[in-house]
Image (cartoon, rainbow, N blue to C red; front, side, top):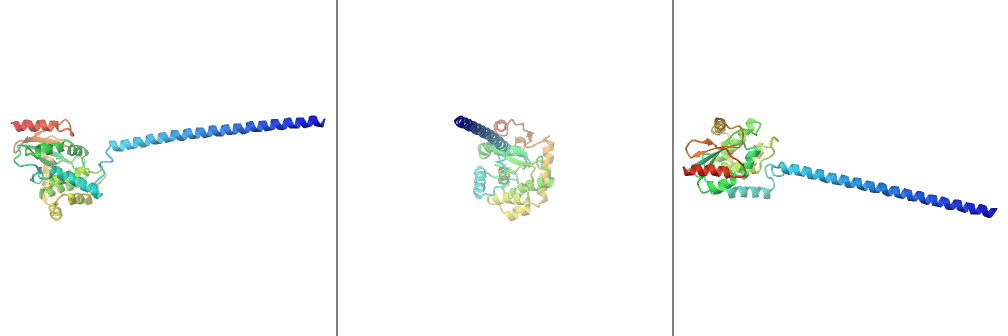
Length: 277
């Protein structure tokens, strides 16, 4: 009898051990399944995070966030910008506070712009460069910079920044100031154009007498010139910037319709047509 009871106890113990073993396997399987699910979710979250970052970076790049950061503070970057502008403009004569190119060039292009206008920046860094290199430098074209408020919200700020160009023009450096401004243009409607910003640009203009520039900025003549440009822009029927008028030097200017601000083709066609007359 005791032997039978002992066998029953052993069988019960074996059953209990098997049950415990199965229970432990189930626990391990459940733990492994839960761990695998967590890994899958983390992987999915990681993929989503990468996609979100890529989208954000794409938006920043597409909107020019990396290219329009305002005045250069890094000396290497600043020197590179000044060097690029000097290479483009060096040796080309300036006249009349706002004109680039020989006064005897047969064709004149009037460029109406707001310095804070991002579309004007596209033209300045796009189609304008080959026009300067291929037509202004050889003496076939002169370009006048004219003011027309479109992007700058505050009239006083607009007047101050445009007068800063004309004050540099008193020393035949207007176009250096224009180019440096557009190369270091800040984000629109952020209020980046401050006195410090305007002074920082002036300090980058090669050979500019800062004392004279500061004094000339208060000239009523320059403020009047900005106002006259506005009137001329409206007379031409311009409603936005950049806007252009072209004609024989000393003659009547006609509104120029362009097809691209990065490809100079439509400008070249107009220049060549006038040059042949």
